[in-house]
Length: 184
Image (cartoon, rainbow, N blue to C red; front, side):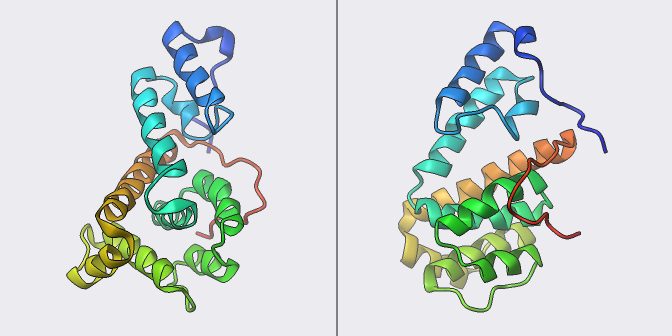
């Protein structure tokens, strides 16, 4: 399948595209990759998306390790190879054990998880599969993460669902990665 909304050469960017691209490139991401390639066609949308994503990925109330776990669960739910290729290695570096990452890739509940990992995993899976979260699952996440943590967790799921939808529709190709691609 071919990339429907591939890179636009910088010399063809509008002023608005140039300004928002600069925000991404000069920010913590350091490059215009993944979802920002197709989103560049809508500079104002991209600006809002990248600002939200910058908060959720780098400064959320639940920290990098749990944010990366939520991103992986979302990527798996959407069969999103770009997000998986980018975030599986980051999740491993941030302390998510390899067996947890591998189980998520296989759509299985990981066997051995600490309380926070299990709470975040189960919350995300329920939210994606059932479009809601059971009271017991919510209460467990709330007790471990607090209200802001739960809201940020919901935000991570929604934001990475948005990015997954954009890249799946645009057929954005996955970058080279140390992570194995998600199985079908």
